[in-house]
Image (cartoon, rainbow, N blue to C red; front, side, top):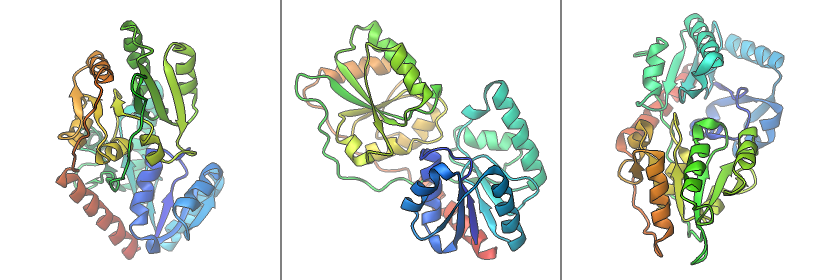
Amino acid sequence: MIVANFYHLKNTNGLFYYGVDYLSEDLGKVRKILVRASLANATRQVLPGVEVVSCTAGSLVREVLRAALRGDFIYTPSSHPLPFISQQMIVVHDVFPFFGFKGKVKELLLRLSLATSGCRVGYINNSDARAFAGKLGADHPKGLFAPNKFPAPMQVAPVGAQPGGPLHVGLFGTDSAKKNYAELFAQILLRNAGKRVRFLVYGHKTAYYEELVRQFPEIDLQLVESDKCSLTRFLEQIRIIASVADHEGFGRPIAAALLANIPTLLVQRPVFVEFFQGGAQFRATIPEVVDRILELASEPVIQPVSYSPPAAVVDGYRSAVAYLQSQAAVA
């Protein structure tokens, strides 16, 4: 059986839904899910019928020890291995959390935990997460390509702004400065174009978001809280999607937007190219992204896009799911 360790997830972000997708493939193999109290209700809503345990740091240790003694397989959809337990799998999503002084401390702790456990390490992309996993010593056979599941196509009828109004541009995520919104907004203001674009950002009210509001009062910026609004409803409010982020691991909502035929404009990053080539429009720099946004703001009709997920990624997801289920069967 699987005991899923969601304790290190603090909100319903991409890592949360990544783990939900993998567990949902066969809930009959999931014994329980360990979470913080703040995520317990959300977890029960998306995974009904599975035991969800609200944990403190102390009770997490007790639950993990019981799972290990039972021989359960511990699945953690984040980069937080438990020392001395080999029957487990963690997942590396991106390298951003390991930058800077605090990041190096996290990397050292991660190395120590991996060295004592020898557990399996999934990586969600081949662009940078795979290399980082290899750097940690988790190359083949310990490493496993475990990409995101592409969401099912949604039927969306984007409304956006009325003719003559600002272009409604959707942004995804409010977790950290890796989103590069400050540079995006600064480029808009350099072109005196603050009234031509309305940005709707899908995420949570974080310190990063509140700092952006304070720093850029001239930018038309609206938070759409992802816990209160479905992704379908959000996509109906926008005309295009844009992202200028660094060090993304995947971009689940970007994939959803492309599969809903919504034009998507991305800064050229290896991860974005790996997953979204053939559907998204790419620009080499953030100023070039802004130039293209303003071009689209002047166009009366914005054509929908056509996009299909890369076959190698779809196959990679299926293989990773098969591995996880096989371990649950053994345990």
